[in-house]
Length: 156
Image (cartoon, rainbow, N blue to C red; front, top):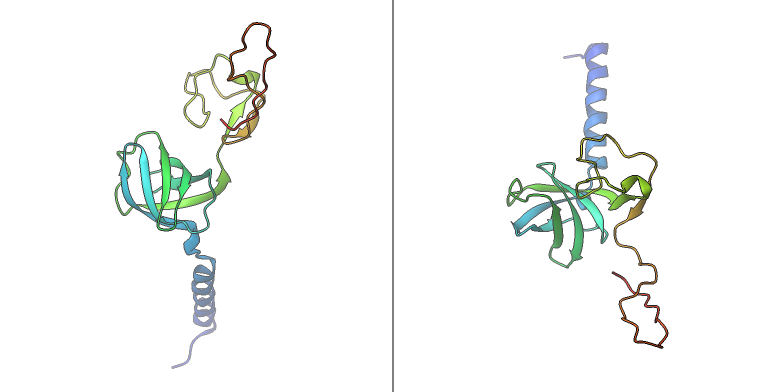
């Protein structure tokens, strides 16, 4: 049985697509929910995830990876965890969680990731900053009379 030129082209195309599918598939990029409750999901897999990285659950809900352990990753869920079930797939986004900052945020009502929910449209000119950054010098020490204020430089 001899293939026509058209069948040969299709065979070559299918072979290349199958080969590319398996070479582009990376197991380190996905995980499965082991348990979920109280806004925390335990996920098996995600071997290359970074602390503070955003993930997306199969339901579309997003979360932040905070607890990186040998057996699983602890993920804080942004929003309700009722749509997340054991066995659901979780994928890495490759980006550390950041939120909008600046004067454009004054007087606005936003959801967890800084998306406006007040019906006033998109945010105007703003910057973005990572959620977990070293805080500027803060006062968490109450000064006594005639004593200098101590500058404390810690993570918040």
